[in-house]
Length: 264
Ligand SMILES: NC(=O)c1ccc[n+]([C@@H]2O[C@H](COP(=O)([O-])OP(=O)(O)OC[C@H]3O[C@@H](n4cnc5c(N)ncnc54)[C@H](OP(=O)(O)O)[C@@H]3O)[C@@H](O)[C@H]2O)c1
Image 1 (cartoon, rainbow, N blue to C red):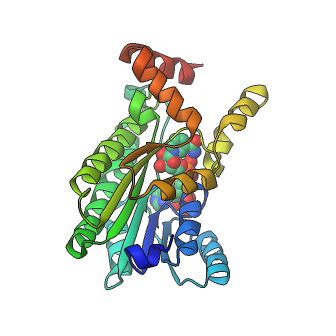
Image 2 (image 1 turned 180 degrees about the horizontal axis):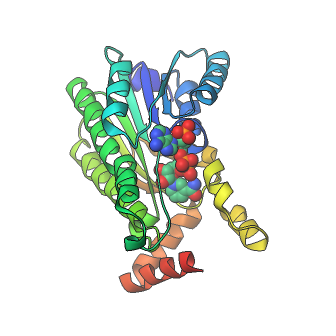
């Protein structure tokens, strides 16, 4: 799809350094859009941006910003994109911390809240205002199946992903009859560098890897359905799993399943 023609000159990906964010940047470049990459590892982003530039002839900006510091991050991001013809945004970055809710200190919870909720809210609102004013643009925000089930021992993260999912779905409906396409994509296990560091070793880890999606598969589905669906679950296996849980089990059973998963 010619994304530049449809949505505008520039797209921004929050959490662009690797994994799903990097795959989204590649999609933007393939679609002719210039890319604003946001993350903390500036050199790595620049290396990847240079490759997109060489391969697809697109321009880029790299913004080193820590989304756990919403004031500073938003200042840098909004300054870097001021005056650009922005046409796409995607919020990919996340932060989680494992432990029983009350055992994790409040400052850590607040840091997760900053990345998963506060920075997300401010950035989504900022670009939506711009896109709505022009009646042109697109958004893909990334959630998680933990946002559907709840996520015991990782509760703050699941709650944050639920916030992203529900807010994005609501805005997707509000903009349905306009020139702005908004989509939430809910991921199950995905082979990102961060996730792969945390997979269990041995047969259990191998089993997870076998059924997980790659970031490119996620990006393919996300962009294919952009403008057609408001909320998608990535991959047939994940879709079937969520539909089965919703149709055949109680909320308590779903929460208990997730709890047992992280407890063991
Ligand atoms: N991987 C999975 O199995 C899985 C499952 C369900 C849902 N998801 C969702 O998929 C998305 C990507 O997951 P992931 O595993 O790839 O996540 P990740 O590796 O933790 O983060 C993705 C990107 O965000 C950037 N980032 C992280 N924290 C940041 C911060 N404080 N400020 C600025 N940038 C930050 C990272 O780059 P820098 O380190 O350079 O900042 C990285 O490029 C998330 O929304 C996650 O909730 C993933």
